[in-house]
Structure formats: C-alpha cells, structure tokens
Length: 248
Ligand code: G3P
Ligand code: CA
Image (cartoon, rainbow, N blue to C red; front, side, top):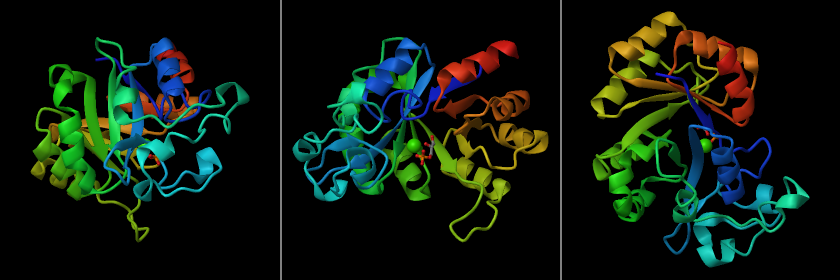
C-alpha cells in the first residue's frame, strides 16, 4: 500500500487552516486525505477549527463553546493567512465534508472537544454511512476515542498521542498499544517526535494496528518514517511530501 498523504487542516502551508479553501486546494493537489479539527458550538453545531477560541485565526476573541454557529460564521478566518483569502468563514463539519470528492480520498476528523460532541457527530454522520471508507476519527482523549468507536462502529477510529504525557513523562508505547486494542480501535496516530524505530513499528503491526504520524514538514523526517513503513503522514505541505515519496 502506498503511504497516505494527509493534508493537515487542509493544504495549510498555503491556504488558511481548517477552511473550505484549504480543503479544496488539498483535493486539487490530489492529496490522499485531509485532517480537520472539530469543536462543539454553544447551539450544538459542529464547527471546524483548531483552537477553543477564535483569537488566533480571526483576531476577535470568541469562545467557541459559548458562541452560536451563526455568530462564528460572521468572522473572517482567512485574512490572517493571506489577503486573497479575506472573508473565508469557519465551516461547519457538513460544509467541510461537502468538499470531499466521491472516491478514495478521505477526511481524518479530529475531535478537539470532549465526548459531548459524539452524539451530535453520530447523528450528523448518519447520511455518510455509504461513504464510510472516506471518513475516520482521531482523538487524543481515551474516553473520546472509546465513545466515538461505540457510537460509530462503522468508522475507523485512531488514537492520537504525543511522545510525552501531560506530566512530561515519555508515553509507554506498549501500554498505548494495549489500550488501543482493548478499546477496539483501528490504529495509532503518533507525533513525529515519538521515538519510533523498527522494533516499535513491529509491535504496532503485531497488534494488528494501522500507524500514522503527524505533523511532518521536513523532507528528511518524512524519509525516515517512509523507511519505517508507516501507513500515512500528516503534513502542512502535501506537495513537499509527494516529492519525497516520488524519490523513494
Ligand atoms: O493530526 C493530528 C494533529 O493535528 C494533532 O495536533 O494540534 O495540529 O491538532 P494539532
Ligand atoms: Ca488536528
């Protein structure tokens, strides 16, 4: 299987992250997948943005969980990246998914908030059941990943992990593998700083899990993970990653 190229927040090296413009550009560049971030709004809609608030990307401070989608929609989250993207709004999940061409490309949906979004997500994704292979869910929090797999057993769910715990201790890969298997999940999506080597990749494979790595923006780092035979790499720059893959 070819290594999957996953555009992080869309083609975010050029277009404003987590916008329809960034997803459309990624599909135009023939990237295999796009990653996006999900947050629940005050009125129970699912908004696509990374942070809990809008300050960084809209230069106006609104807490997403305390703001209705209609008010989030009034913000411009494109201009900070480049004037040509001025007026680009925060998409709803459904608006982002509508950009996905029929076929083999897919979305990695990262649940950024807590498990409260899972019932809403399950309801909104019902109509996507026939296109199940074009969606998967990723989450750092174990309870969120567990709930997502229970509510959406027809979707692949991958557990995200940094290399360090919140207390700055190294994450124990064997324990993480055991949890992922026990939770019935489909794989792991690990930070590029995770100390992966041939042996640890073998351990992931032996457990029957898929393996993805984020967020790889340097060609030499991408080459190292390609050598290790990971299933996919998340990158802000899918064009760079395609070049590295073609040289392999
Ligand atoms: O794809 C996983 C990666 O996006 C996690 O980090 O902070 O960019 O959401 P972050
Ligand atoms: Ca993310």
